[in-house]
Image (tube, rainbow, N blue to C red; front, top):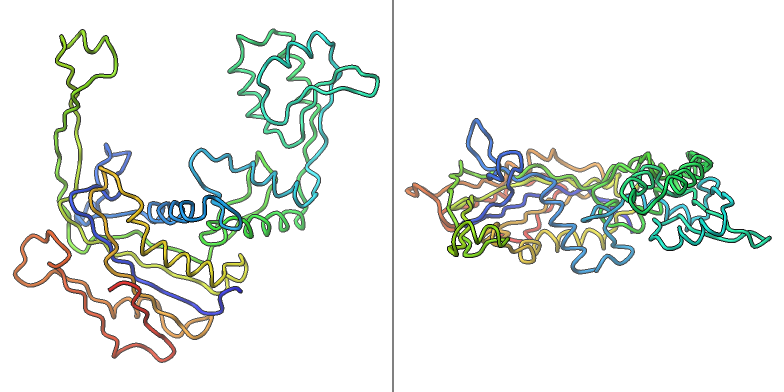
Length: 365
């Protein structure tokens, strides 16, 4: 059952001696606001942790599969959607080839969608499915230059030219979008751009849940550490160091930072994607436990410290989100010069000013 109420929430989490979200364009330094010095964690980083938690607890099983995951080829999910719905993707290419070429091509590990078959007269044919990504096949031909003769390349390129794809109709795109929303948790939760050039166009999905960047309550200090690995990767490095076998590196950490992020859940968009009460319960669980299953040496000790959920009694809501967020005040305790633990902060929640029709749920805190 889709949601029929709006939600807004505040998430508090902290880090001790770790890097909560390194910036690859800055040597993996912790992200900061250059003017204020406050630490930042992107919304993309937080969504990735939610995706990872759902994948961990549901093992990529439908209807809680994950669309945006490591090494995923997004177009494959679109093709699966159209095939499952029996929607035509185009016309496959069939090029008759000699038995000699068929035998030699069969010895190669052909990419998905490219097969060697037989016609009714038992002659061989090279088949390229209409779902094959043209660019992927061209890249495969380049990567296998040494194994392919000029004749083989020409056959593959000519067969690729004969393949005829087709643009889906709006109704077909909508059907594909609905199938993807139904089977992938992150699409119906966060939305996705499904208008790919290399796969059936399924439009765009606006997700019901949106997150802000997380910002630290106080400016953070970045600590730089030199680290040593007592080993080298190659024999050449070992010979150069005459057996010392040391590799030096650097590591950046935040001694302590308490971060605050805001989130919004739209009942109207939930109805469009099919985001349900069960999905919402899974999302709350992910926010509460995602740091427990995302441990690494780089991230130090990260913990969820507060999850405050404002539930409206209507789909449109009963108060502006910013007015609700202002009811939660987080500040460093008086006399604490350098916060190094959560106990150095105090969280004040003024429930006396809750607007009519809004209920506060303290999931954590």
